[in-house]
Length: 158
Image (cartoon, rainbow, N blue to C red; front, top):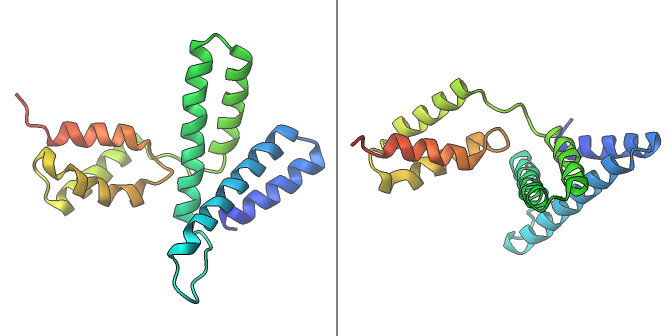
């Protein structure tokens, strides 16, 4: 079952069980996916569909998690624990739709592969490495952390 179909199924189950918070998060996510499809339409040529691929769906979910994480940090800093708890619950719901994250060893191996593939040796070539990594890691790794690791690997030791 693809991710969009799973969202529909879980939304129906949430409605039946009365889990309003889960239903609300899934509706928000489906709305964001629909907006992404609409955004994609003008770029299509005649005969192409605006349906999103799994990687695009994962990008939307990852962006929603990132958004919630930023809001969580702001709420915690402002002392709004009630809102912070709500954001934590929503993050947990969203993360349930993401694939299992890579372990540190798996992530290190993927980064090593990309570095070897791009033959990057300097910080100026970091963009090439990230271009290779992004589609391979979507939804399975925090790209900010990946960026820091790649930067460390490409920075010469002093």
